[in-house]
Length: 378
Image (cartoon, rainbow, N blue to C red; front, side, top):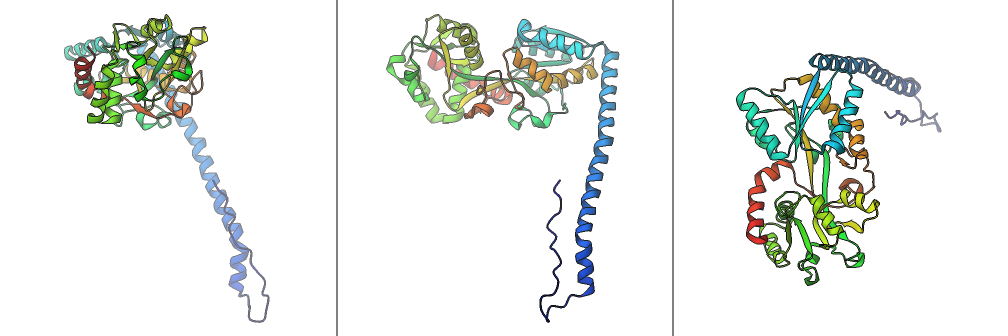
């Protein structure tokens, strides 16, 4: 709040024609005090709002926690790695909210979607909260989701949450080149997408050929950023480079790059390259802009059997405390105010251009990306 300090000082007459009227003097005398009074009233009002708002917020929190404890548990269907992140989150959540048990079931995107859909159609919903890359869109279409918000929702940029409130990103996936630095010196690393067409790279590049975290995501990024015509022209040229399709996760493809089977993984999660490099592996990540970025998002089920505990879990996962747990377990937090373990891995702190592959983009465009991959890279 800015103090009002622009009141002009009343001037005494400097010549015979400058006659000061009594009301001028009165106005000048009370101008600064009145401004100060206005400022004081505004400050007092703001303090009053804060004083009353804090107890209300605490009361609301207490009411939510009490209701969650009556429910006793929350059920989370997750696609995340259990040992790496789900168990640490469970331990922290249950420590913060004793009396509320976090139950979880782990499966991939498709299996999670199928299980929730079956429960919804049978009218026996077991899950409260779930996550995934794009599985929330068909479940939204099926009418099984409920919109939600969290206290710090405003801290998440628009590209990381649904406009209608049905999902919010919890972690980011930033896809870059993963390079074996023994086989490909840093000064010869591709710096643009066109550089991938260099004949010396033919047969030396690989990706997961059946995943958004692989060929599908790469194709989608090219078509979205270059446009249909130029994008297809580029992809036809890239196909002549004989990209190797590996039936394994992006992490496993990177491990094969580290082992020397290939020079480059075209769709490496850049934080994976950092983890391996810190352990002494000959690997590094390099960005081609715009960098494709997707994320794992959380969503709330409309028929959640434990709605208060579900809200509590959502608030925890998306809070600074929850996001720091993701960071400490080598994930990239979606919340901008929580820095990554290594600076520069995300678009917001690495200052690089990104193309966000949002859930709706993936859901609606994936069949097209799959067809292009099948036609050109098989």
